Amino acid sequence: MIYATKADIEEIWGAGFLADILPEDVDAEAAVAAALKRASEVIDLHLSARYELPLATLPPGLVGPAADIAVYLLANRHAVLTTTMEDRHKDAVDLLGRIGTGRAGLGVAEPRVSTDGDADAAAGSGAAFSANPRRFTRGTP
Image 1 (cartoon, rainbow, N blue to C red):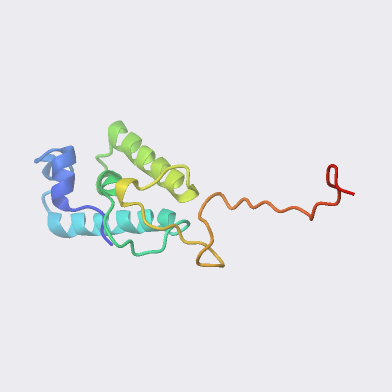
Image 2 (cartoon, one colour; image 1 turned 30 degrees about the horizontal axis):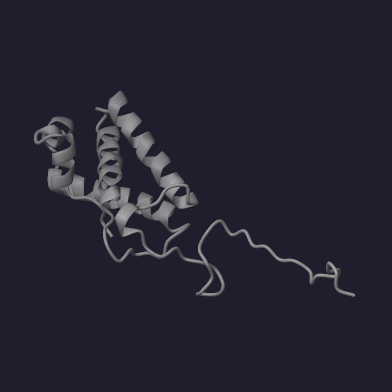
């Protein structure tokens, strides 16, 4: 699944942004499509630790990180990388790491968490409790 579009990048970063960071001799459509595909692959690597892929719906919370990772890839490739781009890329990857470990979610479109083993097992931290049968009781001989 591709998590963002060229229009999303332009909405987040500004209408003329891509023209500013891409050299004139580069096919902008192909470069942006390749960067968005790669960004989505990076997102899938993180999500696959916790969710069954592909996701049934596009969580709106992944559009920004996908756009920021794609911009980082485009700018890094063409040597126009700025500190802002690096910081937003780092923040996006940190968020994906938190989602992958369960410390953050996907928001309203939160899919069912995949579990190893029983399909009806409760999703969570993986902690389980058990106890031995009671040996002593109060007041009962």
